[in-house]
Amino acid sequence: MIWNKEMECADRETMRAVQLERLQATVKYEYENVPYYAAKMDKAGVKPEDIQTLEDIQLLPFITKEDLAANYPTGLFAAPMKDIVRIQSSSGTTGKPKIVGYTQGDMDDWGEAVARGLTMCGIGANDVAHISYGYGLFTGGLGAHAGAEAIGATVLPMSSGNTARQVMFMQDMKSDVLCCTPSYALTIAEAVEKAGIKPEELQLRAGLFGAEPWTQSMRDKIEKGLGIRAHDIYGLTEITGPGTATSCIENNGMHICEDLFYPEIVDPNTLKPLPVGETGELVFTTLCKRGMPMIRYRTRDICYLMDGKCACGRTSIRMSRVFGRTDDMLIVKGVNVFPSQVETVIAKFEELTLNYKILVDRKHNSDTIELMVEFADGLEIDDIEFVENMKRRVEHALRDILQIGCKVRFLNAGTLPRSEGKAVRVEDRRKYE
Ligand code: DLL
Image (cartoon, rainbow, N blue to C red; front, side, top):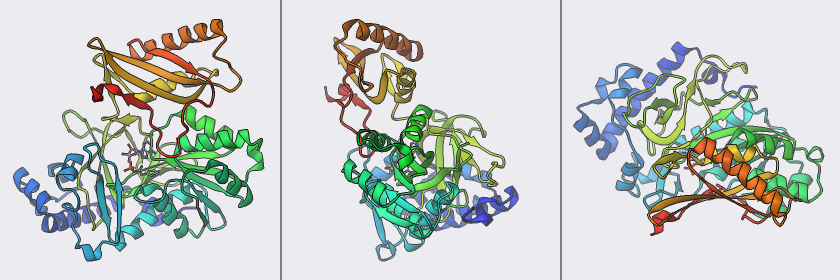
């Protein structure tokens, strides 16, 4: 089923006309209501009337997380507070959180976006939606909730944590779909196995996982551990929260709600637009938001766009999985290292689990990087010969992909703290010196 055929299956010409009309209205509204952005436009020498085609979007200045910090808390709100019905927030890297305000119309569009996502994963009014994203200022819980209510599903507002209770509800209430972070899905799968429950004993058939980068091997593990189809759902607080894009049953990229959110990919260094298919930084312009519209917001997420009709029937432009964030990238001994590269190596070893942590430090003026990773259940770290052999193999594989040496420390299964939300994979101690 398709939730909004008119928008999700529109031909290119119709979609571009909708986008242009909405872009022009958004730019005019922003110019008239947000003095900070109007000043940026003035400085760039561009007026709302200059936006005559979709390509003219390139004339507009970007909005960055630094702009949000400079305008903390509500300086970028375009609507008066009386029209703001919801505040959500996410942590900012500069210390101050990012505060986002929604009008009722924005809330309705957010619910619509998640409703489209759930529907494309085969979820409908007869299903029980088990929502284990955190509820509160984080957009995961309330966002998934709004979409599940919009499609008329039976909502279980579990929030995250208390994993044993999650499993009990999942069994007793016969949950059909699980919504949580991929790392928490793994934690739940582990608890299911520990409780001696076979995946086929659960009613669960699909999951919408997002809020953090994840790899194909993690998807395989979740699908096997819970006996479900795992879908990717993407979004960010500044744009709306979950639902900006979701992967359908074809599992070939995430369909962007492009009548609501206009995507571009730019080269993160030159900020020049890149063509469909080329990897770069994802930039979004909200086309309908009125509480706090975002024009050319630099997400810092790295991915590429895919066009053409999907086998599911939708025509919307898709985005690839997110490979990482430009600000997730570690520079160790001058070499760029992404946590996802390390995860790809770990996944190649059956003896290891995807519970890991990367420690970066600086000793004697030189960077060090160490991987702590758990052995699979039943393998012991006191078998010295086995451990030494594994160490050699894993360190060799890491050097191959990272081009620098990375020490490996093995831990017994169950040693590292389990994720209940966004997993913290990296500890960079160099920042604290
Ligand atoms: O994480 C919104 C969300 C909630 C999305 C639940 C999906 C599901 P923020 O806390 O503002 O919002 O974090 C946004 O998380 O810029 C990405 O770096 C990352 N992210 C979100 N979804 C995905 C995904 C929510 N599917 C930031 N894959 C984004 C990879 C993701 N990274």
